[in-house]
Length: 431
Image (cartoon, rainbow, N blue to C red; front, side, top):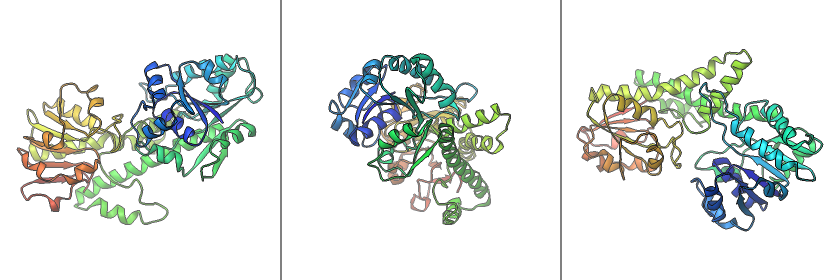
């Protein structure tokens, strides 16, 4: 099938490369000419495991990029909206980029003969596809939804760092369309994947995405709250959750206590669902608590730090890990950001290291020391905060010997204190 992808960010790039791998003809649409050129050269605009190989394999064959909407729509049957949906200052979803894409799409569709399908893959609150996207397309195309063109919602469930694998090996595919014809045609795109397709309406598909992410975020905040209690009781929360996770009704996934969740999805999606609920005059107490617990977790680390080193003013604090999780360079909502901000407010000297994310963090913090290795960051440090689950941090040993005061605050249970030197003070966040 012939597919066009609007937006070449995280979801758009991965979707484009994977649809090409499934044998479809793919055209990426982006207003950023630099991204267009990169894709045509087989270079992904973002880092994601396995993505570069797919783009190089399909570039200029069945995967190309353009900034010309008219060309892309005339040469495709289905268009995916994969643009960003950030939160506004009140935490509610900002649909301005989606609206702009719909306007451009509609104007291009006005010049095309034949049935065309528009699929929303961006994460949007329930009601957006039918109440916003559909009407904008009708307004700017002069055509009628359901008759001249189809509209569907097809949420993504991709883990950053494993997105290519997740796309090609899905545990669920959800397609919410305004009519059976649209749902059937979109389903055809995934015909070679061994996964059942959930067929529903757009509003339900939108809700499935939000509930999916909000539930995972809830498991994390629940585990962190339990971990905070366990810490005060002298109990290893990991031992507790390992046993709890054996219950098939619960499962072991997302029960690891630590510094909290970040990234482009969980924080934004939970806040958006909270905002939508309040629009409906419902106060979502549990979801508000999920966010509150997550916001407070990094502060717990600072309290442990100050308990062990006292006033941090003019002290060198090593922060290991800047990405919100391992195997990505994404720093959005990283738990390191509030930690570093608080440390700077208290006058600490921050030395940071991350295998991939330092360049992105420089856009937020210019005046901290960025190091080329964990050993460099730890050299002369008064304390160390471990913020991201990079595998290399599990192997730290002699690197601690260069610290001035050997205090390690572990926010991700990366260190086994029994294997550390005797003179190191180790504090686990929740254990």
